[in-house]
View 1 (spheres, rainbow, N blue to C red):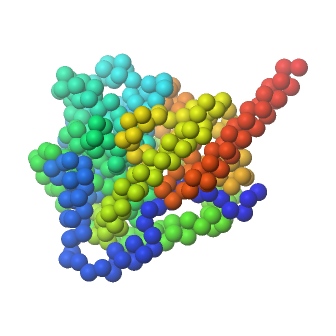
View 2 (cartoon, rainbow, N blue to C red):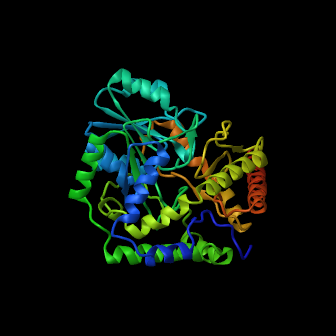
Amino acid sequence: MCVAMIPRVRVNYRFADVARALVAPSREGAKSRTLERRVADFAGAREAILTASGRGGLYLVLKAIGRAKAVMPAYTCKAVAEAAILAGCEPVHIDIEGDGYDMSMAHLELRVDADCVIVATHQYGAPAPIRRLQRLCNERGAVLIEDAAAAFGSCVDGRQVGAAGRAGVFSFDSTKTIHAPLKGGAIVTNDPGLAGRVRALMADETSPPSIADKFRWLGGALAYQALANPVVYRAFHHAWFAARGRRYSETPGLDPRKTAFHSRRLADWQAGIVFSQLDRFDEIRDRRRALYSLYHKALKGAPGIQLPPEDRSGEWCCTRFAVRIDVGRDAVADRMAAAGVDLAYSFAEIGAPADCVNAHRLARGVVNMPFYPQLSDAAARRAADALLQAVEDVAALDGAQHGQGTV
């Protein structure tokens, strides 16, 4: 077993960014106001409102819109359905197409009416068919919002996703494209009335982070810096996952409870850390695009591995390179870990009804390759080679076991 391990995720900010954000003098709220303006300009929106998390932003938008139902892809983060329930909406899960992440239009058309908000999810940064969804909303009197949590930097025909519907929500979680310690987010909208209702809800329901929150989130930020070291990360992986028999932190079922990431606001020092990443965002985006292309070329055509959609436009900025494994996913992940490469699981527990068969099939098979701007080409190729070998080994073992069973 390797002593070092390629981490599944790394944050963009550095210790110096955290220190600078904490000590740099500014008027109270100045960094947040400046960041809101920059995010709005980036998204091509009239207004942006910072939130403590993407899930908190979804909750605020859904509550401010006030429709009875929130229609969403069955394969998505449970936090979307939980936000809908907290906002007083019935979550309506639509099964996905068999070959991607998007909602089945045939199923969607049967469920949408004027009581609905359609949540268009740009899954992992791959844009949803936003024009088709907008036409459907116009025909049925529904409202379109964009779950762009994983799509900061992804474009369609040169325009950033997020501002095509009534509102869009970005996430600055530590697994996304832009990072705040430990979470953050932003709502963008061209509707001043909706923006006013969201701000009123925030005034009533949220408060600045407490001192305890600040120290907890600072501690998390420092932990992420330590985990950038592959040897330290190996020790963490063993203690947090392997020794406890866990592969991911998700739990079954929906748990619609408010947390600090719903009831707090983004602090000014957190906004400063996000701000510093926007200054070098072109570099971050271009590196992610290069890695996405590298993985596609390295794994294309490999038996037992289904790749994510290919970015033929060159306009996406994906947060993850999610592959579907046709053989035993857990066995593959264990072999990868032994080889010194950590795979993450995405939405293994989706909370959708059992009849959403395509979504559940995807949830049982998807793993994420290490994917972040600091990952070198050599490390990415090593991870790809390890995946090819692990899938081949597990498939051979399964074949041998099935052969013995039929003798």
